[in-house]
Length: 221
Image (cartoon, rainbow, N blue to C red; front, side, top):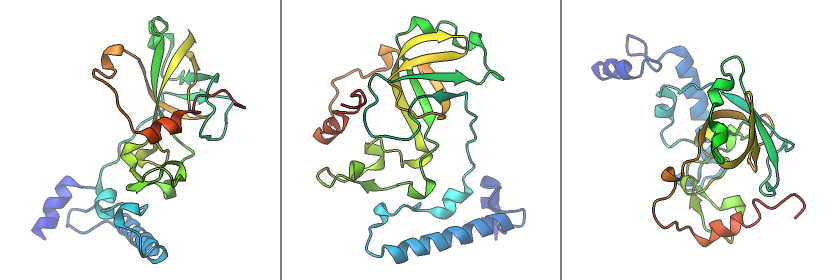
């Protein structure tokens, strides 16, 4: 019991003062346990790294969440996620005017490029991958860990894009080739500085270069 009491000090969301798990947490853990059992029943031969479940589900539920509010939203002519053909696309980021004003982006138009952090809101939580898979399900490409590729089915579903700034007006930013769909919540924007870019020779595997070959082609090509 002493160990549990000590645990509650670090994870108050998981245990009450008596060291017993609160009922909502117990219900969540039961649900997760059932999900894990179904996953093993459906795919009994899969390696643990291939399963779309946390390796330590209890710890995952006990961690304190990180809560973020969007600073704005993407406005784009593309409403559904696509793999390629982001070239020549013009999108707009509309900042939340309840919080931000033109002062928030003062001086941004002096930069040529911007980096956008966004939440891929159409990614399915049930498909979140913690292990490895073939990028785009291409069997001719190697199995790659989720943190060695840029797939949308990643933990936290956070995307990152470097875009060219076309113009800034008020709380709206026009961008070229932002690979985020209409309605995407924007978490942060930062001007691109060459000093934060790669400071040594960049290398990447052949499959990634093949993957990117048509990524920024104009639509229809």
